[in-house]
Length: 310
Image (cartoon, rainbow, N blue to C red; front, top):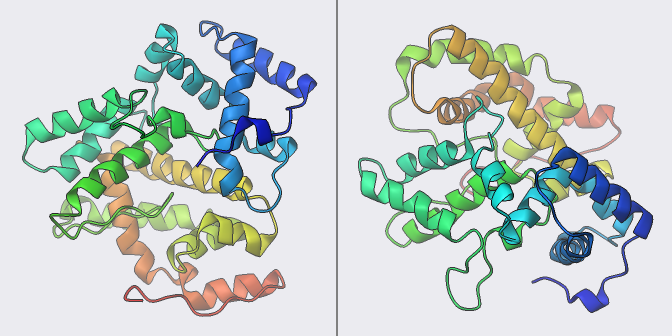
């Protein structure tokens, strides 16, 4: 739950002023009064406070803030028409797909062969961005704390929101936070299977030791971003940004190669993430032994990963 604003320290006036003018400069068409700007800043600080590892200061919060995404979200909550126009035009950064189209692609996987449910899934979610789903609940955008990119966060919330509705009737499970792999489908697209594996292994070969560790710890060991941050003694926001950049670079690099090869499917992102989960099972660089050696080089130790059945 968000923390009462009366218990939140006053934000540093100079930093707030600089941040305000930076956001206005980046999105000049979106006008938000400075008083409202600061109210939203205090509000989202309160949202993030219970999630923060250790003592949260304004310096740490502002360091991890995605200011433009945060400013856009605040504009939507203020029902600013220009903010909504910008949000509608937002692209996910993965194959340059519009946010609304990325949501539709998720709806197709959630409700296969049911176009009405697919359309309703997206429209219902969009309708509740600033309107509560039920009395006492919090609108979707009012839950955004600014500590991660907005578009991927909205896609993830959409996925988990609908999965929670389906869970009663199926064995579907929500995605782990920021996970890089989706469940493997029963029928892979064989035509592109080998090409993907070649491109994905090339991409894995470009990862630094730190990136390999983050990928391995998130997927092989199923550690949360907070657990990884604790291992490396860094702020959780640092790991969050590294995970997002890693995911985006994976999708961009492999996606461009598949497109150049003639990919003509509807959901390139879904294909890449699905196939990646399959490939990582047998990837030597992400084996527990390899990850232990990398950790040892950093003077740290880690035990055996939890099995998928645990």
